Amino acid sequence: MKKISVILMGCGGVGRQLLQHIVSFRSLHAKMGVHLRVVGVSDSKTLVVPVDVLKEGLDDDLLSEVCSIKSAGSALTTLGALGKGEYRVFNGSESIRETEEIAQLLGKSTGLVVVDCSASSETVEILMKAVDLGCCVVLANKKPLTSTLEHYDKLVLDPRRIRHESTVGAGLPVIASMNRIISSGDPVHSIVGSLSGTLGYVMSELEDGRPLSQVVRAAKTLGYTEPDPRDDLSGMDVARKALILARLLGKRIVMDSIKIESLYPEEMRPGVMTVDDFLQNGIAKLDQNIEERVKRASSNGCVLRYVCMIEGSSVQVGIREVPKDSPLGRLRGSDNIVSFS
Image (cartoon, rainbow, N blue to C red; front, side, top):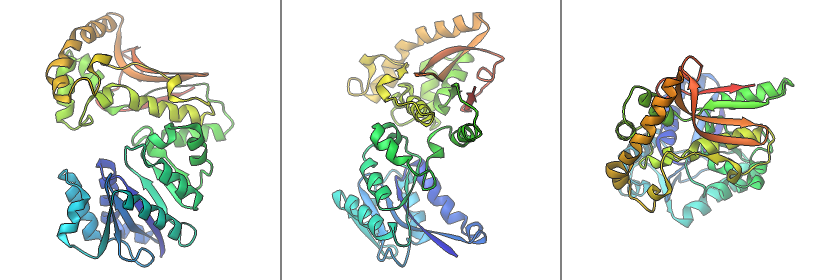
C-alpha cells in the first residue's frame, strides 16, 4: 500500500468536499493500492496536524468533524475545545511556520502533496517553498497562477509534480483537453467560453425576463454566488481563468492587460457600498440597463452571455450577444462551455 501524505490549505466548499471524498472512498483507494494520509488541514487562521506527522495522519472522525465545524461557519480554533483525537493546533504565524516545517520534513523523504483549495493570494509563498522542497502541488486556487509571471513560471515548471486542472472549468477537463491539443502539434489560435457557473445562471435567468436584482438575490439564496455577489459580478474570477488559459498558451501577460467588464459601476464596489446596501438598493439601479440589453439582443435573434475571449495577444471578458442557437446561446443554468480553434 502506497501512502501519500497530504496537507490541505482551505476548508471552504471545495476543501470540505475533498476531505469528505477522502474519508468516504477509503475502500476505493485501497483497491488502487493507495492510502491518502492527511497530515494537516488549515483555514485562514489555524492549522491542525497529527502529533507525529512522520507516522500518522489525522483520524477520519476528526476530518469529518473539521467538515462539520467549517460547514457551520466556525473556525478551526474550536477544535481545541473538543479534545477529539490526538492532534496539535497552531494559530497565526505559527501555522505558516509549521506548514513549511512539514513540507521540509516530508518533501524530500516520504513525499508530500500540498493542496491549495483556498481563495487566498497569501498561499503563494508557502507554495513556492513547497516546490523548492520537492513537494507536489495541487491547485484549485486560481490566485497563485495569476500573480506574477515569476510565480507562475515556478508553479508550472514541472507538470509531473504540479497540477491545476480544477482552476478552470469546474468539472470540465478544459486544461487537459487544451494540453492534448497542443501536445498533438495543433496550434490553438483562439479560445471562447463561458467559464462562470454563477454568471451563466444569471445570464440565462435574464433571458427569461427576470430583472437582474431579483436574479442575483435568488442566486445568493441558492448558494451560487460568493457571500458578496460582487466577487462574481465583477468578472474578476472569469478574468483569472482566462489569464491561466492564456499563459498556458505561452502568452506573457498580466492581469492589468485583460479587458474586464464588471456588471456594476465603481461607485458600488466593495469598500464604498456594503453588501446589504448593494443587494437592497444598489443593484436595482442596474435593472433597466440590463433589461434594455436583453431586449436588444433578443431583437437580433441573440441572447446575452458572459464570455471570455482569447485571441492573439488580446484577452477580454464581458457580456456579449451570441446567437440563440449557438453552443453558447443554448447554455442553461450554471453549465460551462469552452471552444478551441
